[in-house]
Image 1 (cartoon, rainbow, N blue to C red):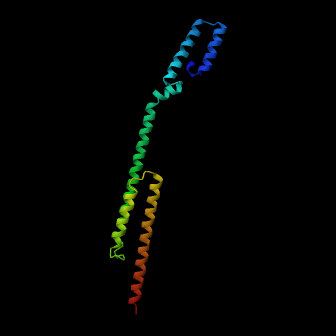
Image 2 (image 1 turned 30 degrees about the vertical axis):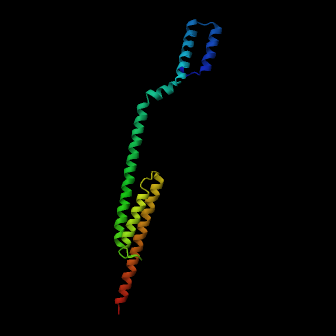
Image 3 (image 1 turned 135 degrees about the vertical axis):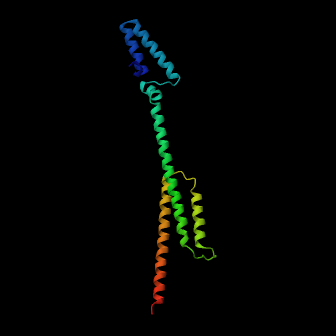
Length: 167
């Protein structure tokens, strides 16, 4: 109870106790306690019971919480890594459909794969989860849009060929 009071409050109590001339043992005990607390405060020790408990008793709980947070972060990173690798594989699979050459004579498949690799390498050391999520979502949308365009183009090509064969 005494350790929860401020130093000023303790000094005031000591003065009151001395003026009332209560037992000398109580005054001596309070002076000793105040001196001890001042010494402890000079050395940055815990000033209250809560600080003492936080530093010594609840240390294991904080350590356990830190370990749980670290495990969650590792799981999240593993999950994100899986998503990124899955996206990269999907891009490589999708590029199989781009078999025609560009104006330089290079297959679009190779151009797209090279660009995808460059994009992934540029974002390799990104740590911000929000940016990583945006990149993954943007990549998925781009792959889906490209596949949709190829499918639409193939449908038009098939329809054109059917129309050419009809008498």
